[in-house]
Length: 103
Image (tube, rainbow, N blue to C red):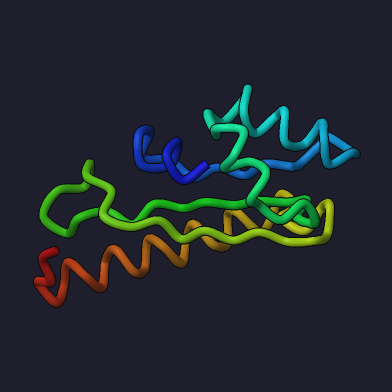
């Protein structure tokens, strides 16, 4: 997910559909490019995921950081949460610009 956020410069949410640990790890490999070893090392009790970009203040196209969250609740990031968090990241981006902070 973090790679997708950086590559696309857009926020993402993901709701895990795989009910078993084995099918979850298979989805990580096939859908997200994890190696089998990387997938095996991850916690299997996460069900909802969210990633939001933070942009370079001097270049609104370059992602310099990602805010990443996950939850053990299946529907934790409902339709309203990403919108609210996106407004927060916009505020962070505006703050960085006003302060002239360069990374």
